Image (cartoon, rainbow, N blue to C red; front, side):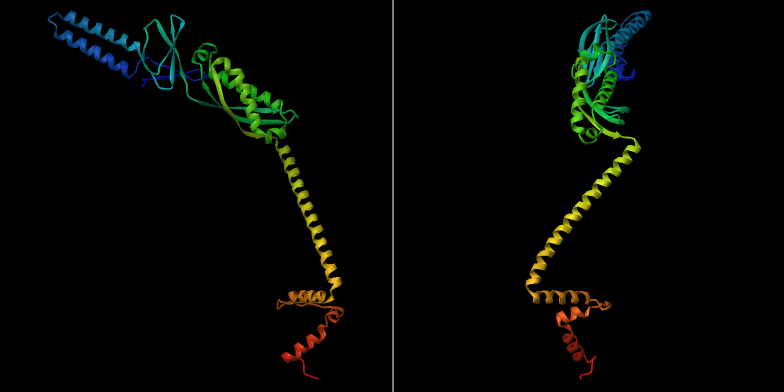
Length: 307
């Protein structure tokens, strides 16, 4: 575990201080051992103090030699200004004042958000697009030596690629076919970052914001299309109903008894409610011979005196 971490630059690559738990423990062991030996030797006070000072110097140098890297970290080491290799994970040793750790690389998958504001689509519609990029470092040597700040470079490459894709895509395709745009954007960014030792895992568009006026017009268009569809369905239903009525008319035309029964059923359905008042034409009453039936019913209930 490092004693202190410092974040430098836009990319946020961590530059670790040389002190760590192992180095401090080693320093304490060396200084303590030499101090114990110095005070037990039959020598003068000056020799003892010099031994303790020498032990502190040796312990400090050994502390600078040992470094500790986490499981997901790789240390880029330069020896006299030249690339010496990668170190880690775990404990590793360097030569003090000769070797120098210039960068600590993180090999885990990272997520970088990027956006394009007021970018014109292929059909000249200004849109704001937010996306997220998932990427990882596959070649630490290239990431350390070929680009100054690989995180900043990846962010700028993703943003410019997004603007290029938006300029070649229509608004309708952007709103509907996001999966194909994600794939095209991933391939474009991966092509640009491959030489830096960066591998793009996936790109996902989170949101596409269009102007409010255009959004309102698209909403009205969608409502009009839905209303058109509803009216078409209603017209189809009317056609089917009229066909059924034509079939029923053919049945009733050839069978008058069926027509009278249907008429009586309609009248009964209309008079089921107690508060219903229905006016029936006399012609309909005569065709169904309901006058005699009504008279007999009234006589049976005592509402009309017998003649």
